[in-house]
Length: 282
Image (cartoon, rainbow, N blue to C red; front, side, top):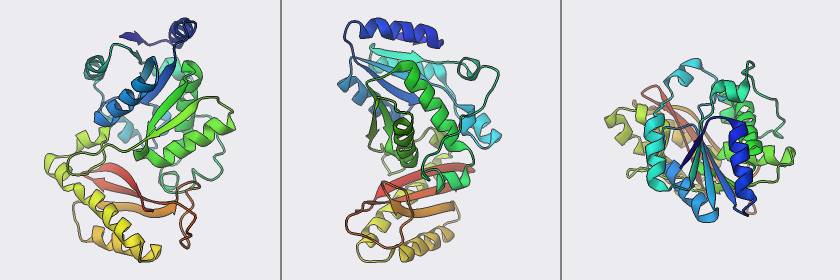
């Protein structure tokens, strides 16, 4: 396993590997690795000769300093976890200064409206921060393929749009959500939940599954009203939003159309921890 904290040294190493006709995969993470991350890494290892896993808690994608400060960090454990997976993994752990220098600020992107709904509505500047760091890692690593989980489905679509707009010649791969045994989407933030709340959080996924079953016979508005009522009955969770949207454009549904794919998106607070999830409906 190789460990780098400087872009220049990583770029030089990867160029030597490409000269040997080796392919490179990229899995960007913010650390606190769980089996969802590892599933991305394993897929990348199957499809590439080498895999770069970046571990970087990106300050520009947090709209609240408190959330940034509380984000779980355990670099030594993350490195041990990756080493157990494969020696072919290259770990990139840059400092904030290495990425941003003295100016910790995002670039500005036009995402064709993908950033104006759901997460974008509630987290100002978030997707500019995501676009900035992902573009930086893509340009640094120049991977054949880069892998992202569908738990952050809106983010995945925005990264695809950013790569298209910036004309980046890298393949963006979306990978299925990994779930805990009771259904909660795996997330580094889950570590901040109390054990009882973490178990009860299966309620989020169960609600999405019921919404999916209702989607065939009920209107989108009736389903959204039903979800709000269900959360009002459950004191453990506070619903921030539930939205049914076109999977490609992320446009909120007005009327179901047979030739379109729809997905339900949800954001919930539990123990002051913000959790997101989504599920394809048709």
